[in-house]
Length: 580
Image 1 (cartoon, helix red, strand yellow):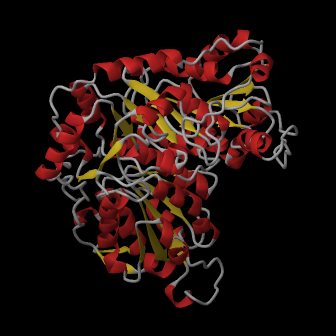
Image 2 (cartoon, helix red, strand yellow):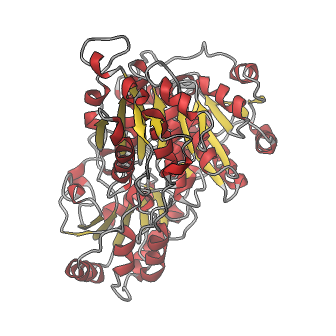
């Protein structure tokens, strides 16, 4: 169910005659309602309050994937949604099952991912009595979901499911929670027709007068620049963006979540901007005279000091969500509407920006990354660049959080937005492996690679068992620097070098750990062995782990320090370059 400007065709809901009798349990109604919404796979973990639903799953048309932790389930559902364009679904029981979903719900909320989480709850008479495994998950999650349902009438289950899916996908997508008391799941309901499948509504058309004013702003500029955010991919508008760039010749930079909307190798694309953005991208933002924001929210990691961000530029903000306009940086004009519709409508004519395009080419050439680092050790930027190049156009990287996340964003070849699955707004460690699982269920034939660190992998390492159980061909690249690298880098730079609780030299032998789960593994120590190691990794038909030892003191560059403008970047010192 891909998002599009025009919506999707309606589908017919299955008839109640599929039931074996005139009544169902509430749990059976829920499972059949999920099938009516076109759900093919759910991720979850059973327990007492959700057990009636698991009973109803036996013989269902949809597949259930047993993760080894509820956080693994919600992260897998999240990635499934990002890659497939469909709603991700996860199940958990009451109490700790629900609370273990909280991080994943917050992740989906901040990154605008359509998700439906279904939690078991204690029986209605016990709610509010501090019953065993009773937690007010409805109240706990209110700030991090688009909507919540506490189902009190079993007859309403089909309508609740349909409404939850509609809310998850309409407008700016996000997560929806359904809390299902156990006695409601066990109650009898009449067999009947289901509500039709929730459809992605047609995106709103931009106002013609807004388009006209935007065209005038673009035509008057001499140094326009596109600031591409995750809203382009959410709207499935990367085709419209690429066509707009082709028609106008306007160069572009991207946020972490905007990567892939333009191919990494596009001649007018300067890379990621922001705290760990590429120098050419940050300098272009500071020099432009018109910043065209496409589905971005002026996050502090992208803008640096907001009053010093794009100081010479007028701001034209394109978005479907009016709440984002002017939230952090005032816009001189905004166009509210579907992103693809807006970009397709904009026709500013031929633009006299040849000098600006030459300046962009100059910035790209002058600040092109050098991959010929000295030394015999593994140079992470080059390894990740080669990994993405060799994986081809079907490459999908699901990334954990830390230094490796920034190296992936800076150096991996990303031909499409779905190729880059990462925890952006929340920055949740432990996302990578569960996300790889979800991505593989969304695109089974893709070359899916999780890039993780020795800190992040330990957050959800139990999901190696899920890989083994289902034979999922996830390839894992583990960059091991025996430290919490990003925290260590900041402590070295901004906390007088006092390293506090970041040293991980007592890590296990990760290759041996993977083999204990039945997953082939190999350790990479020297640069001369890197190509052979990548051959080995990508040739494995099932899951495999490449354990890569890197310099514990390696840093991510450039870096915009806190409170600085984006053109005030710190860079690698000569001593660091020699050591690497």
